[in-house]
Amino acid sequence: MRTLTTLLLLAIAAFSSGLKIQPGQTAPRFSLTRLDSAQKRVSLRDFADSARHAAHPEFGRVVVLSFWSTTCVNCKAEFPRLQKWAALHPEVQFLPVLVEDVDPAEGLQWLRSAGVSANGLHDRYQVVGKSYGVCEGNLCTVPALVAIGPDQKVNFVRSGYHPEEALESLLDKALVPVKAKP
Image (cartoon, rainbow, N blue to C red; front, side):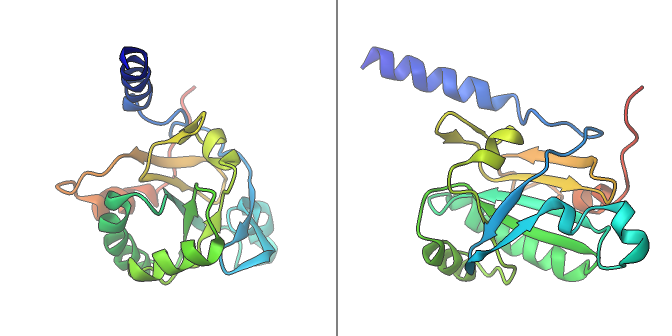
């Protein structure tokens, strides 16, 4: 029992420092299936790619990844605010990313019950969650947000739920590209 408690405390300490990815860094690429269609894959390049944006205006958008799980009460509390913010910003692609091995239909139903109209993505094996530093081993820190600019650079990161925080104004700032540190 003491060993289990020690391991749990170490896991909490590891995640309390926040996500590994930082503003200004290039976002890890990904390709995930949509919750509403296991046949349809979505990649970061589908939205955030300034080179493709020159020829195709639908590309080159800011992408906000919201990592979540169906067991996360705080995710359900945060989603209405994210959905409302995303509705005010059609230039932003809001992508909820489920980091849990559950049936995609269950995940999609959970999103709808949380008031989210966006189609979510399924990171069943937490590969993307691990590359973004949201997951380590079998543990994930959710909710977690990452905003990525058209240049595929990270503009904003936040882990955990902070109900008192002015989330909308933080996300508004995430629409402005972050200068990489020299």
